[in-house]
Length: 114
Image (cartoon, rainbow, N blue to C red):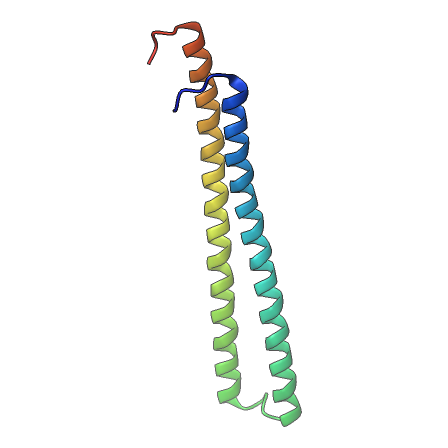
């Protein structure tokens, strides 16, 4: 931890860091939701065209379309995992912030402490 002159300096720095991390998590979550929405819309439109063409019952179409749906679902789950990891990092950072505050108070009480 860097030496902070005051508790308010420490808290301001921690607040900035926490705000930036929370913003990244929220943006990642929003982008993931947008991705999911756009992919779903695209798949539905593609399926509707295929249905109008009468190919939705063809085994090759069904197999390939199912594969595309599985791939997009897998990508979405991978994105959810990334957001989950960002959340875990945020919680670890929050715990570290508490430790830094405790260390700050300990240094105030005992200036010879590390």
